[in-house]
Image (tube, rainbow, N blue to C red; front, side, top):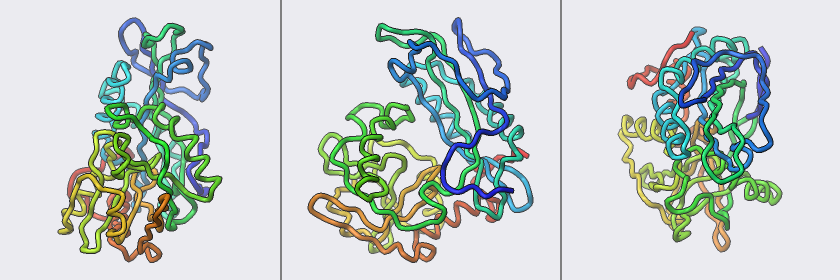
Length: 333
């Protein structure tokens, strides 16, 4: 089995495709064809009417393939669709698509020993021709798979972030859903960050630019000097499934948790910092650079930090090495 490094697209064998037309979704089918044919005036091209999800299938030590908290991915895609005026994917179809795509692409699943996973990308978009500004009336839902390694590199290392001078989302906008337009807004900033030697941007609240929100692709976690886990609370950040799971595991371990607004000036009081998400799991942050300040965190020995321990426990549950006390795991094969 090939070892996959990084977070890249590899065309796999089959994907699930369904069409919405005349007010209803069809039953969907599995396809080998990985390309999409669209009109030049398709709504997704003209007005970015699209949203997506991200989840993973994992190989367990005993050879099974499992998924993690699918119900939350389904609910978040439903919420994203409603906000983007897209007919939500029927719940039964979502679960059917995940099962069929995982089974059809099982040979692409990285080995248990590699630590990789099969990343699943459900995406839905408006496809009929639209020139006037209005929602589409026809949509396509796709769910494809690609084998992946670690999101940031072939090994876990402390990342260097900068506080962005642009905003990721607008107040009362779409920052709380997985709309494609949110990520398009971050492309200029992430390209500029990479050119200047940073791994990611840390965005502040769009209303006051005072409070920490998230990065372009992950939520943020902190451990204070007294051992409290603190994570930002805001209506304009994505409700990360990984973050919610980490919060639960922290509480299980007796760690005090605070979900609240975090002023950028508070970073000087934080001992640990990490980015969390389906792709990132928990990735350590070693430094955050603001215009006038530079904040550093004790993350070089990541395995022996609080966040490193939580990462190990989460991965242990996902790969079947640790008991799943919360019934988060669904066995597919």
